[in-house]
Image 1 (spheres, helix red, strand yellow):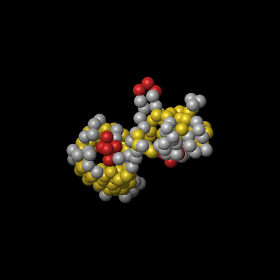
Image 2 (cartoon, one colour; image 1 turned 60 degrees about the vertical axis):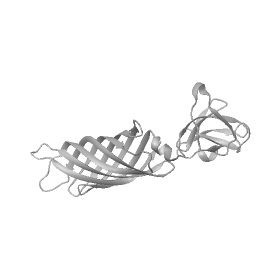
Image 3 (spheres, helix red, strand yellow; image 1 turned 180 degrees about the vertical axis):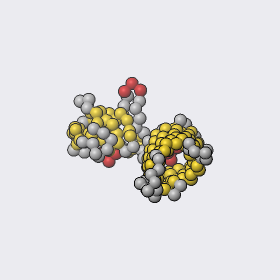
Image 4 (cartoon, one colour; image 1 turned 135 degrees about the vertical axis):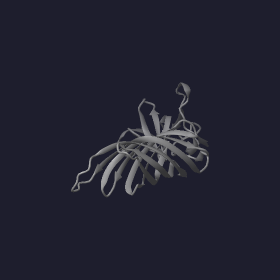
Length: 234
């Protein structure tokens, strides 16, 4: 029997019984977090919430900790039947509220590596915050920006989008005979790309952006950017 794990009103949580010799509770949702408590076979736990493939549970003694999917799938329902948990699906991809990822590519002939976080206002519109490191032959720099993203068909496995945003770029010329000045300028951009639902909670993302750098000199600069990478939604 499949059921989605969600917190219910009035602390009415799902309860499962431990079938393995023990259930390991960690301090956080990941194998890098230490085990601080174990629940013995035959005891029960309440499932409070799910975060990716980790579940926050509460033991009978009130201790709360995180358990991975593999162990949770060895638990039993109150009637003794095995428990099965739903995997993330295309519907979860469409309705996910949060997304974070890393992309790399070309920024006007320089290498760029970017990290971003996204919050979905609704299935069609989301807000993003970006941080990028730029590595060129003659200068290095960083860029920070905020974007609005619109997806016309968010329920498609390959979902195209359009983006509009603004931010700042800081450029640090490398040492030369004539030392250039560090610059911090405002930027604006428009772009387009697509997100591809891969598997479980992972997706691939590729995009193109056209930037205008509003310099303090007489002429503004135009820069093209291509990036591709992967992301994780929850």
